[in-house]
Length: 199
Image 1 (cartoon, one colour):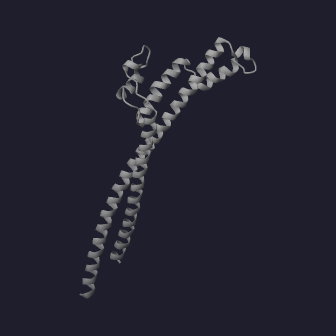
Image 2 (cartoon, rainbow, N blue to C red):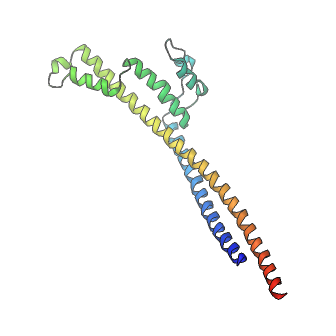
């Protein structure tokens, strides 16, 4: 009876090990696919990370944002962490400066209120033209920032898939070892039972 139970548990363990191996292979594929796509999409933008010479030492540039960007200074932007640093510590800082801390939505709302399309003369004033330019810049900056943060999010998902693949392979290896030990124990138990029954 013990031998049969050992065999049953061992075969279940082997089946689980195979499932985990397949899951690990798929997770490795997901990790590589996401990493390649993020790298390609970011490389295509041809963005170079800022340096002290291109704005990081500008008066008023926050020290915490400079510290977040310095590890990538002068590099081509090709990875998720670089995209997050550029989006949150460079683009956002400059947009905040230009709009005095207002968001695109707030600037756009202000423009629509002060420069109604129903009053072309008012919309043509210097103040409205300036606000329109700020609105457009904020829109473009927020769009780029959002796209970079999507790249960062996908890169993070890809990294998690890589960690999950490693865990699946380790789990499969442990199950294979346990299943092999279980089958060996079942064989030994079967031999003991056979010897006992013949005695």
